[in-house]
Image (cartoon, rainbow over all chains, first blue to last red; front, side, top):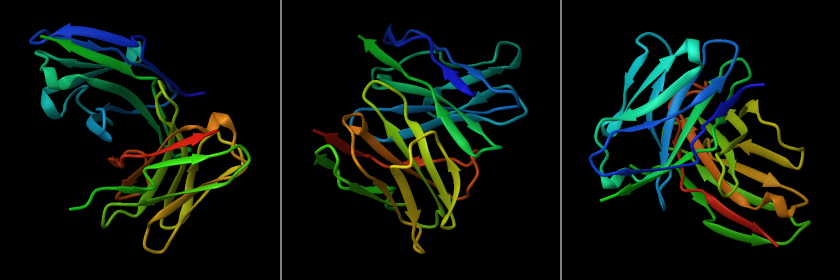
Length: 113
Length: 114
């Protein structure tokens, strides 16, 4: 069965520090990979996505993610975190055959001044 | 432009009752998906509809059903409510019925089952 694992439930970083959120997936074929952010009072917003091609993808708000097939990972990174980045981050996988979508359990990010 | 809208915002029901949640997609979008997000967890896929046909179904019991109307709005129905159905129900719309199309999420309906 397909699955998405986000090992870190909660991460705290200082403003201006770099950030990496981990995501591992379990899927037989080439996955469609996504990162979403959910802020209090706001809906889920797509940060970036990977389907094929260049394994380093750029997203909105200065985020990027790298697809590593050998590690079944799709980690999200940002070089310098801003206080407004505090939110819940979800990694997700799209399965084309059954037209289904799987979210991880999320990583809560706290940014301290 | 209006985003995805959902109604009602909050809902309180008792066990055994039935509930209907509504979703209006972004204008021009023909696909609607439903998700259940239990507190502290990621959203779980329930259904996807495209052009009024079911295109995908998650691992939910038959108490959950949905439909899509000619104007592409959608309803999610849950029968015989259980305490465990308490969650945030999210609707997402996209332009096409494939998993690689960007989904735009609504603010959700918070369902509490007592």
